[in-house]
Amino acid sequence: MSAEPGAAPGAGHPDPLAVVRTRGYAVLLIMVAILGVPVSAAAFGFLALVHELQSLTYEDLPRALGFDGTPPWWPVPLLALAGLLTGLAVHRLPGTGGHEPAEGFVNTGAPTAAELPGVALAALASLGLGAVLGPEAPLIALGGGLAVYAVRLLKPGIAPSASAMVAAAGSFAAVSALLGSPLLGAFLLMEASGLAGMMLGLVLVPGLLASGIGSLIFIGLGTWTGLGTYSLALPHVPHAPQPTPAEFGWAIALGAAAALAGTGIKKLSSSLQERVEQRRVVATAVMGLTVGALAFLYAQSTGRNASEVLYSGQDALGGLLAEDAAYAVGSLLVLIVCKTLAYSASLSAFRGGPIFPSMFLGAAGGLALSHLPGLNATSGFAMGIGAMCVAMLRLPMTSVLLATLLLGAEGTTVMPLVIVSVVVSYVLVLRLGRPGAAPDTAPG
Image 1: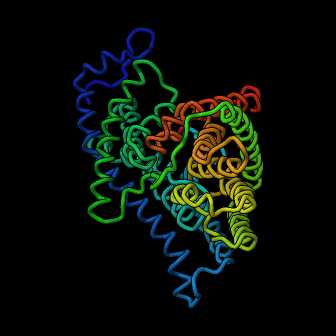
Image 2 (image 1 turned 90 degrees about the vertical axis):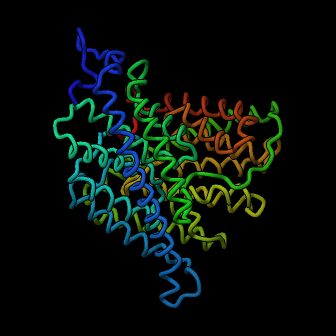
Image 3 (image 1 turned 45 degrees about the vertical axis):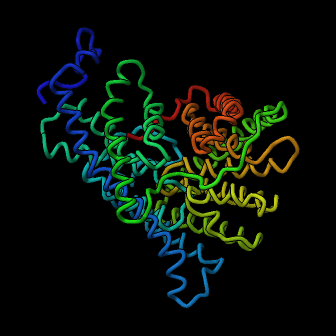
């Protein structure tokens, strides 16, 4: 590329308007549009493989071994194996399997070509075998790494700033449909990047282009293969009445509770991570055993499926809301405790992202509180998601959008309540955080 996007005039600060007018920026947009197709197709394939591994190991394999369904103890050896495989990938392969999820959305940059296999294998072992994490962080890393690798093959001398924008665009393409909307995935990366003003626009244009193309590829592949888009969606959302003064009180209470819970999860997972790092392979297997034992405990004490404790919770959100009446309050509380501890253990040792488990825990907490007077289920569900997401991600705008856009038309009704719960949670989390602690940023 003849001109380096981001070239700095004067005091070393880039002139975004001048960059946009360059031929190099136009070439970059064309590259991004072309690269968005294979990167999003690879992301779709990754999600499809994770889904198939989950079905194979949790449903098909027990039946093949002669069991009538999945035994409640099955997650214990399954998660021990997940820990062993993840620990070996992290310990033996370049790149330590990507960033540590207990550290939040840390901007570690796009992985190199040599690190990509380790990131993919650690994530597959974690997500495919039941760790309580989501796929967004590995997708962000893999999308950025694949895009940079491809563009360097095509143009070895590409400038570092242009390479960074290509990496960001690859990440946009990879998560374009995951959160239910290409705009929401783009907004997550925008808010997490910390960029503002014209520099945000400079990076945003190729990112939005890649996100739009990626979403089209997801839709096309989902229709062609019959596998769907692996996009966050709720099949049925109960009607939410107009907010009441009592619900605004619940919004404050939910925000405070989520802040305390999120801070506790972060502290516990960070403490466990320090111990895991001392003996990576063995300790990761132990964390896997812990997650499996918690799933077994939940199944034995409630009579429900152990899988409700496992995995990210993305696919279970719809059922959680639709079957709210089928859950006893006690079962919901046991689910919250077991999922919280399994989430903390997974954050400390496995590889994945924090978004979907935090959404599930917030939703379950909101539904549990909706059994008390003054709070309806849909409002509690949405407020819990927003408050818990911001407690874990520290991204207030993204948390509001995640909780409201997910509900479709009902999201507009509950949005004022969600905003209150998110603001309360966010402010309290910052007050509870370590003095001088930097806010989390997304992996790119």
